Length: 321
Image (tube, rainbow, N blue to C red; front, top):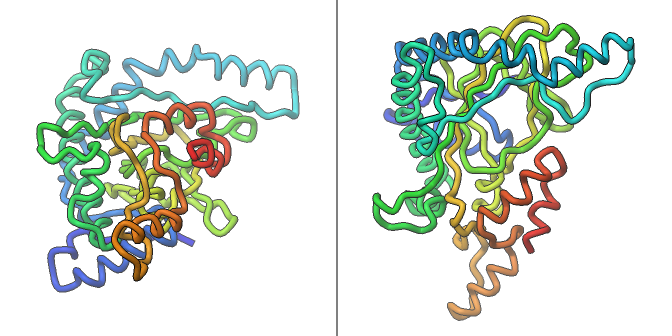
């Protein structure tokens, strides 16, 4: 079983309707799909690979080798214990956002300018993907983007959060004793992943089985987060995924996420609940009775998520009732 691959360029031609239907199916049945011909140049993607690998070598590798995680694994092996390391991830990670420019790596040549250009292109792609979701769900164009921006009408009122998590999963001498990244669903909106094209590791839970997200050169992997699940009233589900530790080398993973503003109110789109024949006010109330998720402020959701990220997601929604 392989993750669906969508040729994004076909949205502009005769196969638009067919491609839209394929994306709808991916969102409903998979929660994950890969985009090829997505409009981001191969030249830029090659530069991203280069600077992220160089950054790990120049600025991150030594720190990882001396990390608590590495020491804990060494101790476990020395004791010849049959136990696994729990509640830790074999991952080196840092965050890039517009709000933390002063914390971006500074010693790697061309890292900052390359990642700034890449994030700009990826944000545009995220907004195109959200517009496709709007259309497939029968919502007004820009509905999801507006919801994530707290309902702001003007461009200057945009305050949705666009972040980029740069991860490396270094070669692991004992992958049977530790996981790369524990199983979880993503808290936010739309996630765009530029993963390693050679080294496997990412898996999703599909029909009770863990399956690989197959490496595909210069593709962008899309997955839906918890907030898309809420806005779609459960039609699009966020999906459990994990990363395995591997002995095969240093795996690159660059995940960008278009998330709501912390102040944004998130709730199922009222258009997605069957209409009743009652008067307008009563109709709204009847629709709300059919909502599968509560209405909440995203910042409140995140307060719960940071404590329960690796636990079942349903109690997170229930806590906000």
